Length: 94
Image 1: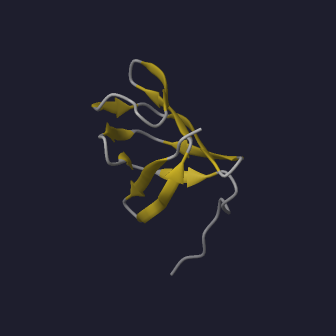
Image 2: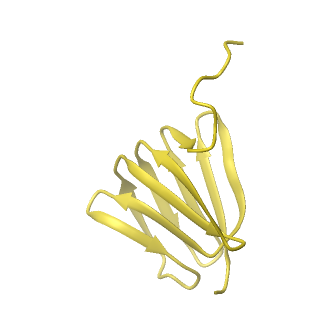
């Protein structure tokens, strides 16, 4: 599968910036799967799960909404809150 450049950003910073084979997210009109060569478009995201397929692995996350843009150069997911499932749920206060 041909990879594409994926960026995932949230208010606390850039959460992912690299190659991916597929991105699966929940849009406001239903579930979406993005792969290389996808037609350019933009959509709002609904609260739901997110899966990034890269390097033969699947990484799971929770996305609380935001926007997804797809261009020929890059796929960008901008989320109001984005948490990888393998991250600690509680973070120490700074």
